[in-house]
Image 1 (cartoon, rainbow, N blue to C red):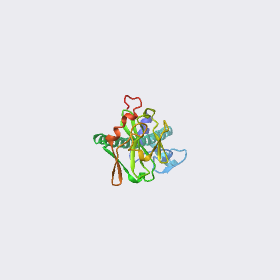
Image 2 (cartoon, helix red, strand yellow; image 1 turned 60 degrees about the horizontal axis):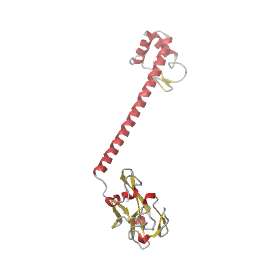
Image 3 (cartoon, rainbow, N blue to C red; image 1 turned 90 degrees about the horizontal axis):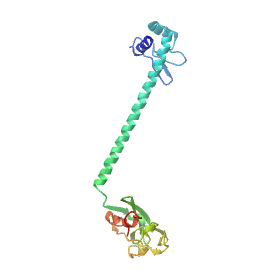
Image 4 (cartoon, rainbow, N blue to C red; image 1 turned 90 degrees about the vertical axis):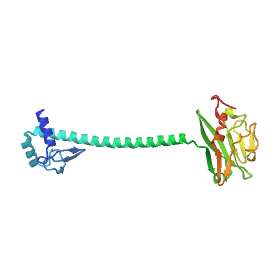
Length: 231
């Protein structure tokens, strides 16, 4: 107990004896403050004699060195914990910002969705998904038909919707993935019922194709797949 107390006194003393600390593998002499390497506890025999004279025992000097090493490790751990706490604080800030953004979206729900007209100029049908709540995802597509008109429809029909297979584009036709029937692109939004793609209202505003969220949500029954709804 006495030797430990003396060792701690040596470590915490002022400029007269200095402070010995070891961080990782680096050593700093407790007497003169110089950095050194090797198996000794101090940089030279002169410094060792001064410290031994102050505390009276070589064995205590060894204990001082070991305590200094522990202190150094403890300091390193504290620095590591501080960095970790900073990272947690930063993560918490991002989570808070995300929650605020989500709350803002909930308070101001999207009423319409717009797509650039240029996205459809090559005639390829583009398929989209819209989360409708209750685990239901509404699917629809938009394409520019062979007559140059941009059209939109749900990826479902009145007959095969329960299978949830939708359509595939093959050339100028939309083909039902369930029954195989083919529908010319110019019929989309024009012909309804049967296995025709169920039409989805769209509007061209300048260089945008605009769909109303309420019109998309009207197609929710096509995608319930036994979840309590359906056509």
